[in-house]
Amino acid sequence: MVMNMRLVFIGPPGVGKGTYAKMISGKYGIPHISTGDIFREEIAKESELGLKVKYYVERGLLVPDDIVIEIVKNVLERPECRRGFILDGFPRTVKQAEELDKITVLDAVLLFEAPLHVIIERVSGRLVCPNCGAIYNVSWKPPRKPGICDVCGSTLIRRKDDEPEVIKARYEVYRQTFTPVIEYYRNKKILIEVYAGREAQEVVTEVEKILRERKIIKNEHIISKH
Ligand SMILES: [Zn+2]
Image (cartoon, rainbow, N blue to C red; front, side, top):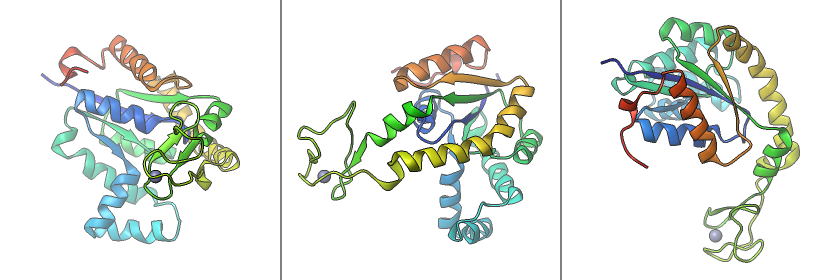
C-alpha cells in the first residue's frame, strides 16, 4: 500500500509553523525537513554541496535556486521520505516551486496565517535567560518572579530578534518573498489556509481534520497515540 503525505508549510516568522511541523511529523512519522537545518547539516559534513552553501550563508547571501534544489532533491530521495515529508522554508521562489514539481507530487501546501499584531504579541512576549537559556512567555509561561529566571535567578532579557520592529520588518520580507509562491499553489488548487492565531494543538487538530477530509491522512498514517 502506498502511503503518502507530501506537504509544504508556509507562514510568517513567529506563526508557529515549526512547532506544527514537529507535532505532525512526530505523530505520523514523516520527516520535518527545514532547509535551514539541512544547510547546517551539509556545512557540518563539509560535503561538496555544503561548501557551496557555506560560501553564501557566511556572506549573508541567499543560497541560489539550483543549489537549494539539488540539496532538497537529495533529501527527498532518502528512504525515510518514502511515506511523505513536511517541507519547511522551501520553496521560497516560483522557480523553486516549479523545480520541486519535477521532483515530487505535493499533496497539499498549508499556509498558516495570523494577524501581525497577534504574532507580535506572541513573539515579543518571549523572554530568555542569558545565563541558562530557559525560555518564558509573559502571556502563557511567565516566570514565578517577573523578569527573573526560575531556574537560575538571572535577569531575563528580550532578544533583539523578538522586538516588535524587527518582527514587523521580517513579516514584510516574508510577505514580499512568499506572495508569488502562495499564488502559484493557489492556482494549482492545493493551497490550504489555516488560521494560526490560537493554541498550537487547535491548529494541528484543524490541519489533521482538513487532511483527512482530503484523504491525505489515512488511519494507517498514525504511528503512535497521543
Ligand atoms: Zn536561567
